[in-house]
Length: 201
Image (cartoon, rainbow, N blue to C red; front, top):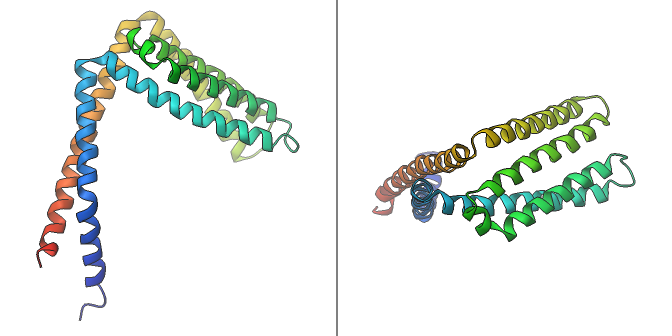
């Protein structure tokens, strides 16, 4: 008698046997992307542009929807609307011209990130400043300040060393992708080994 533990163990084994290969696939794809980023940074930057554009577009649409819902109960809704519009425009521009962004060495992507960060941070700061006192206000102000500072500092770095910034961005993402992919591969192997004994019973 094992107090009901064998059933969860077999269920867990079945789950592992079904997901290990998806984890492995994710790891392999991450490693491949990392190698491409190190060998051909322009192509990697195009991929980064697509991911960034999709994320910012979704963020902008959700922010616009929230602003519209709050227009009758919150006087700050125009600032939220501005945040959403800026995000939608930035995301759409990046998605429409990802190849151009890659060919130009990713400068379009970098400056889109900079403009997005500065505008988003400024609008968020004003929006949070008008909120009532409390943790939400402090968090909003802190988030706005950090985003704004990031945009300004990033702009200075890009202006001073654009080539190094582009290569650094691509290589950093590439190195991270390889490490992350390797971790996923190891995890997949462990899942595969963990499910094998029970599957053979």
